[in-house]
Length: 114
Image 1 (cartoon, rainbow, N blue to C red):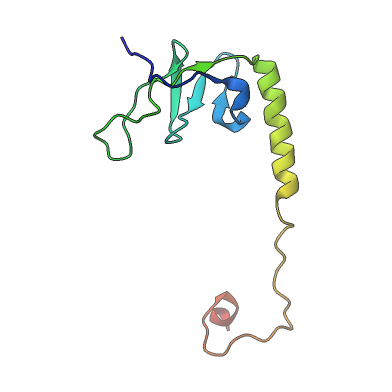
Image 2: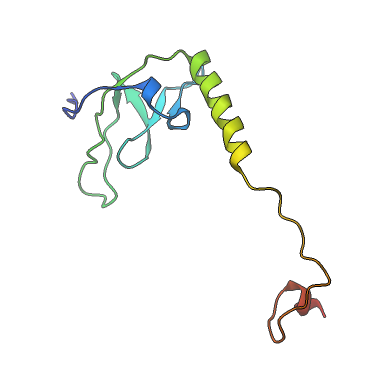
């Protein structure tokens, strides 16, 4: 039986929506708070896993997570976060102006075709 890692319980509402997966009909998954690896929640704890070195146990293993969100509330938070991220993205990349002089001797897609 796995024991928790003695850290305070993290409420799911304090995690970013993209660190949690509460889709109906799928296992509840969470990104490990230490290494970011996606793990299934078992008994409200992050499933045990190895650290990046492959030998030691990740300190985020067995982190307790309190599910204080419904799948609907989580999905609403996820949609809001996706919208906000889209607003922060830069505008679309436009092709270079054909009137701009190319650097001589530089091989790029425009000069390679010539």
